[in-house]
Image 1 (tube, one colour):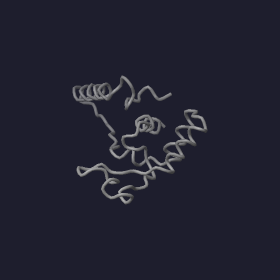
Image 2 (cartoon, rainbow, N blue to C red):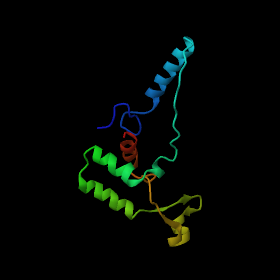
Image 3 (cartoon, one colour):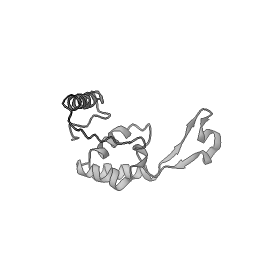
Image 4 (cartoon, rainbow, N blue to C red):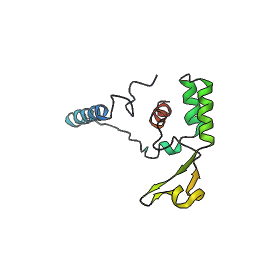
Amino acid sequence: LLDTAQYGFLPGKDTSLPLMGLKAVTDFCNYWRERLAVLAQDIRHAYDTVEFTVGKEMPLRRLGAPEKFIDLIRELDSNKRTEVASAHGLSGEILGDEGWFRDETGWGQGGEESPMGWDIFFDV
């Protein structure tokens, strides 16, 4: 279902192969004195910024996900609360209810569904 060029978070794949390809192209262009343009994207906040309709619903529909599954993801998002882990413990344990906040966008950091959810979104 996902593009074969997708390397993130998939079993048996990592970024070493595309990085070796980039190194080979860079070496080739350097040796032959050819120009090369490379685009690198900073996606360090990737999980946190995925909005539901564009970032979750549309990619799931594109892949043919059942409506019940999309509704389940919507329901999970509408009731999502997050706490922060710190050197002093979990924010919910330290501050009680004030230690939790409503997480309105994104695939949850550390969530089991998050890597595949990000791949689905990024593959669009």
